[in-house]
Length: 255
Image (tube, rainbow, N blue to C red; front, side, top):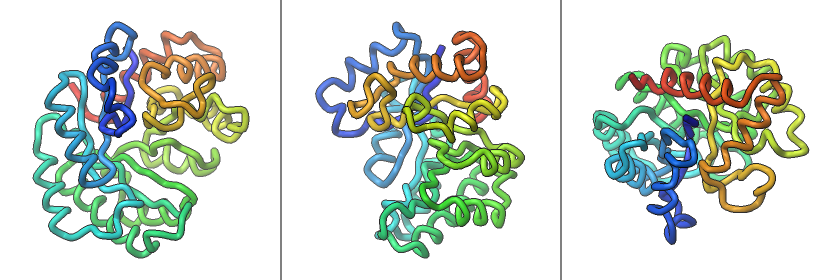
């Protein structure tokens, strides 16, 4: 079964058909989904969805774009949530320099704080890094992130950087972007990365693959990502599904 390691079904774009869509997953070959927190509200949503649906797990964390008003008490709150049975990761956390706000120093502060939290509670991390390759990597090295483990979500950098993260023991999250015409860099990464270090993700409702690019994404479209990875690696689609499912369970330490 396909394992979607990163989605946001709490998003308002699913308000009209969330339950019906989620209940259709199993019959369409989707086994598990990780609902990822990206702030206070979405972290609450993630935990709620994980408690409602047996095939959904939760990650709890503050996305870099949501760090402007974060307080130390929010870190304590995340820590309390991390003890819940179906909370399996701290994320998504990291750095995003695509826009000028929040201030880079603020982003770095809470990225470091959440790396410490993950280490304290013994959970892997889901790393968001956009236009911030050097700072993300430097902080992760400083905090010995290789001892924490996790995934680089929606990997978007070069093979040279990918190799560093792979050497640190991280998995690479690959989704709909692999189907885009301008994704030569990611195709090179997917080609060179061992299959046992790749996990599938949607980032739903964002980054829908071709032929649905620009529309609302969902786990049902991961078959197009599977198809592309299989073609790139010259293997069967079933092998991609089977190995990436094993990888996801190892990543998130699911029995």
